[in-house]
Amino acid sequence: MCPKRAACYQRVSPSAINRSLRSSSQGGAVVSYRHLTIQIVAPSLLLVLLLHSHVVLAADLYVADYHENCIYRYSPSGIRSTFASGLDYPSGLAFDRNGNLYEADSWSGNIYKFAPNGTRSTFAEMSRGLGGLAFDCTGNLFVANQTSNTIQKITPNGTISTFASGLNAPVGLACDSQGNLFEADCRSGHIYKFTPDGVRSTFASGLISGLAGVNGLAFDRDGDLFATQFDLGSIYKFTASGTRSTFASGLSAPGHLAFDGDGNLFMGNCMSGTPGGIDNFTSSGTMSVFATGVYSTGLAIYLVPEPSTLVLLGVGAIGLLSYFRRRKHDVSHTGATGSA
Image (cartoon, rainbow, N blue to C red):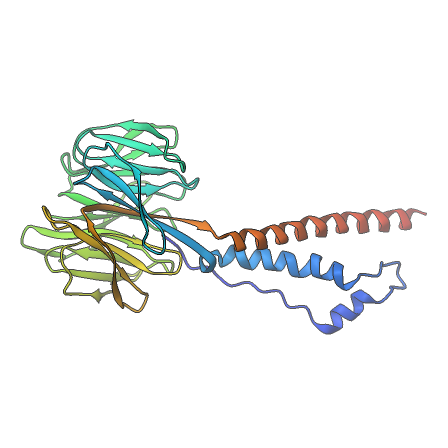
């Protein structure tokens, strides 16, 4: 999910504005308040918005339903619509950087790609038993396979290779901002960490009770990893160093996870044979029911700018263009004056 974003601000002192507004004896041009607004405020606004865009993002939640063999789309207010149907036990979901949704069709062994308008194409043909999906920061797609106990890697051009093997029921996958892949090894109760070149280490262990252990994984925008433990009915939070704390407990069959742009956590209940629901947790851990009557086996959220954000970004872009045009004009004017 999301790494920490450093704040960046530009402060303009009154004295600097006054100096800019005065005619310069060195041949500088007078700058009006309007120009200052466009040249300074707008570019700064654009930069701040880009760095803090998660504050003004709307999120649609996509849910794979294995019972109805479809993918549902939920608006932020909880209104449900069918995004795709006619699947064969849909499981993992993940978005690429362009807003295309990828779905692991567990029983057919196919990876389907859905354009934002819902148009479906086959991205890869694999074997049965597909589970979680995750993209790294360079566009590689990782696929968990619970039948072969492997993780497959698919490059953006479709080349498939085995990234990891010898696992024990890999389920959830998640990538951090450095390109490291984390895997929920359900039946061993481990969370494994893989570097981009495939070196494996144990990030967490002991997450097992009975036959079912760790399940869903997701990173929040601060870089902390959240994991569900199926049988114990808990969600655990891990810092980057691996320190564990309990985020929520007493849950019913917690499954896959997804964060929205405001830091709210969505969790699917995945009790086999009975319809569950989608629970929502605030960053402080307060839980509410978001949706009911869905057999969820995968969650994904795609963040898109709200219209107001797009308008502000447009203003910032215009400001940047005006700024660089002004700079070019000033440099040309200074050069011509100096050569005279």
